[in-house]
Length: 388
Image 1 (cartoon, helix red, strand yellow):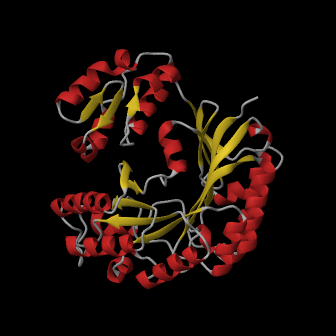
Image 2: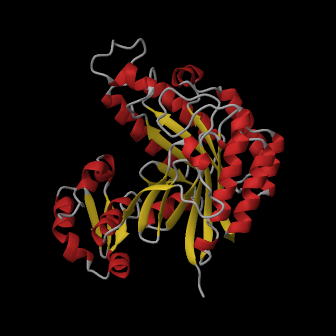
Image 3: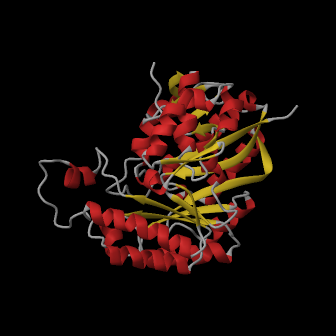
């Protein structure tokens, strides 16, 4: 029997220090807390084995937090459990998130032995002043050493995470960051504009209407857009293909795990607060560490909360606005195969209107966002919400 495809996301919530802009489920904790959490995570992994016996894992993404702060033996235990519990494809893409300054030669060698074949390193900026204002614990030199170690240990698929529109950043410093990164010839770059999220120190400083004017301001909207367009131009000139709104890859190095999210592959999230979408349901693990650690996960106890059954309407909407994040867009044949309905019967008027506005382009059976559409993608996606 042919097995169904499954992606795994593993959440490691620990970091050395929480950054001022970060609203992810992450926090600093003493090293003794790491062991208890990882033992429970291994139990959760093993406890899910029977539920997914009919699946083959095509990608694994270990994210956080900062997974690379964990000692090597905990990573070895993690991957040993994954391979016991799941049928992992021989050619699976296995990504480990890492922060500069936490990657030792020993850890990199252990990652390679565990099958990790892709690193995602969080640089954000090559300017030490900008890094300091973000609350990052590393310098550009720390990143450079980590990157070079990874290359020396044989990693041939490395992503570099970048952020633009940072406090005190201007077009010149952003161009300098891009030049420095591209000189290193990574296979993949993810670049996001800073978003000020509630509940973060940055929101207190930059987001509240009543806040005092900050000492170091954010770039204005015009500069933010100029940074966005500079990224597109410089990556294209260096042979990168923009395959998704915020992601650029050399040919053949698109992140398979993220492409799976955008194209509707089922995914299982394991660990504190991890999200899943399997068996027609979307659900999320508890975000309460005390509760998570108290569950009997090896014997089938459930960490899942916020369980929602996806309707046909939900799935069609997600197909459109996740698929359109990809620069290849979506096709009517995929829509028909998945939902048994003609995409043009469901979305024809919306597609034609957005095409007239220059936000979509239609090429036979395929629908894509235009460059203008990519610039205002969130507005476009809202148009694909169906009436009840």
